[in-house]
Image (cartoon, rainbow, N blue to C red; front, side, top):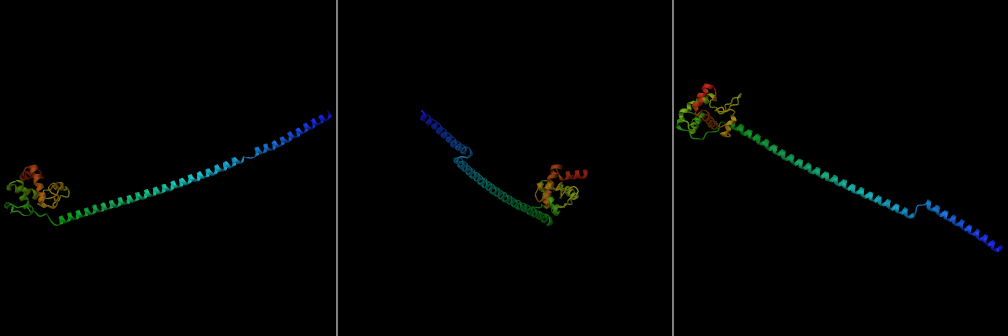
Length: 231
């Protein structure tokens, strides 16, 4: 009995020591687990960070390319716009130069015509008009051609002698009346010809048409003039 009791106490003590040792070992491992990060998680975090950095660099590179393309496109557009504007300005300048040159040429021709004398009359002159000369001779011929009898010419002669002295360049500065029939304004005579300023025949044709349309005859126009001071 004594031996059995002794072994029982020895066994209990051994078991207690084993339990205590196991508790200490477990505490040590538990502390290590709580204080340290697993190696696998650390590796994963580092890989994710490297991937994020690569994506960031890729995005920055894409943005840089986009900005460079935009600058190039804007530069090309600006260059094209500048070239188009330059071409348009060049065309406008050429057109303006041509217009100015034509205007100067027209003014030169006009002055030359006015300074070189009246346009010569090339139509036939009836023998009944031979007693007259210059614009009066032309007026007599054209009056007969218009259908008026020769008896009407003295009235026409007096009417236009009073108005202009049969001078194709006669001009009333105050009213603007011009030419042998003193058309008002003078440009009305353009309906009879573009050379109305320098051609006595053109002025006379217009004047005879005006007289016939308004007074029926040269003597009718002269009678009106005598009563009213104008026709």
